[in-house]
Length: 561
Image 1 (spheres, one colour):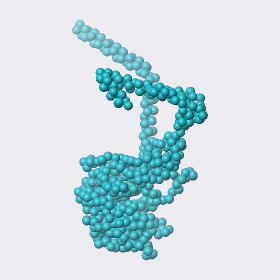
Image 2: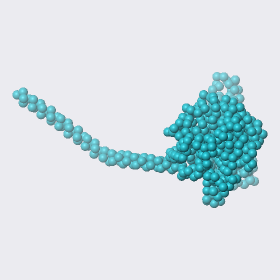
Image 3: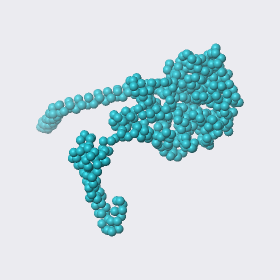
């Protein structure tokens, strides 16, 4: 409308076009002011509105200043919307609105009013936020709002999100000794606070994560162990002889597994079908996954220990990461994403790295895939759940040697390299929530060109060369390498240390400000006296100086005489 009026005035009066536009804008502003004034006057002076209540039988006159027409409407049509809010909407609609928000926005909404705080805090989306980042809690927790001891999903999410910041704080290092040769693989079972390690000495060792003590170790398995995987019911290890050695959890055992050799033969087992060394292992609820240098990935049934699928590749299989009904594998310089039920590849990413891909990592949702290669580069991909397409999101080049291992615990990606360094990368800055519908797709924040390389947030130095394996938990990082020792970076006290440091820093600042204020007050009180003293000293110096020169002249006159 404004554009049409402006155009007509410009065609009729070309010389006064600027003035006509200005007058038109002023008219619109005046009309808006009249409207707002009339509305305020109506709301303030009309006797039918009292404390949010109105008489529906009375009529309200509304004047339209543009048309110059006054019309009367029922009060319930004109004023009915004034007392409504978002809480008056149907619960299903409120739920859909809250589904469109990310955790930060939902937290802001909860601060608006007490009713919105109650609705947003009890919303089911907090459970989805938690599970898509860290998976379902392994340890059962009382979830509800009835008792003070129970934690809601919102409280669990806020607590875990707060703990994720610890990896930028201070840490302590524990060194575990016991291996006689290089450590090729480490696995952290955070739910039971256990660490499993093995390597060239062919012995699987189990450690206490909190105390850093050796709990048990297996008999020598007769070959180099390159892969270990575990959950609360099963422990498996694979080596260069092609065998998979396994231990089942024993009920009542304080540390789940008896590695020393159980008298029950059903608790310890081994099986074999690979024709080459086993390079990687993984577990889910019903299957065991193994990748080998015989260029195959085999899927095993956990109950019967029989091979149900054989997925063939064009090169050695170096790493694999399963999720739900799919499994991603690295073979040569290519990445495969397989459908395990049918054994068909959903997608193949060719030439991801300049040479071999040694390590893979995947998010709990399965939508983010990370690769580390012999060229020292780390790539991040997004897997679309709808069409299966894969897009590259970011690239990092933090190492000067091959990346042998990757581990991911939202939002941190940690990598271990042959250069003896660990890199910590926060992926939150690269992700942006679109719409939180049922699928909750993660989209790229920026379309990255290959020349743009993201820097890591933190590097951990001070180790020997060739770090072969790394794993990450909620507040710990475990790594093993050629030195034959296992290192644990403990960040559990990082927040407490940071709080103490900030408290001491605040105390020092407060003392400094108090001293400065006291010094200013003292200067204000003694300012005049100080000025008088300075002036007196100056006068005294001038008098002494003049007397000295007078005496000098007198002395010179006497000497001449």
